[in-house]
Length: 149
Image (cartoon, rainbow, N blue to C red; front, side, top):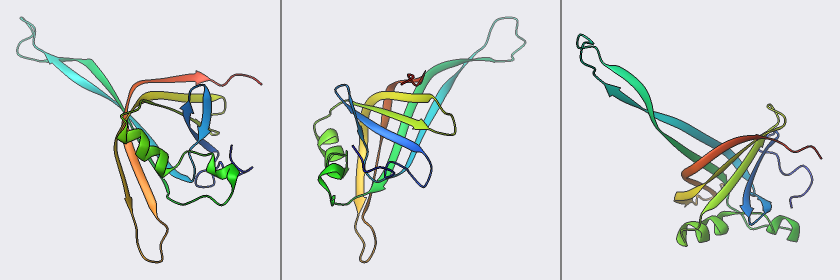
């Protein structure tokens, strides 16, 4: 896994993993993670409602975005982490991903999403860090309590 302490994102205790089988593999050099939960609004009009529409929750949609530094790794330990090249292979092969993330501001809570990558991009600039971003959707997103060690 990662070098001790290197699993922090933006100085916070946020841990982002891609599951390879039953093994969580840290996403290397992640700098940002966001996920969205959207619910469509289904409207209806009933007879006798005097022309006033009602609404009910419809389908849910889960999406995510991950940003990170695109770099080659200095140590064999870091090289075992999931990085840009792995995301490229995943999107190129249409491989399903399972992403787990935990935030220490909500200790003991783990979010797990299963889905696919939709896009991957990177940019190179002179005298700047190379970065990448990827986004996609989850077919499922669940919140669970972290098992007690």
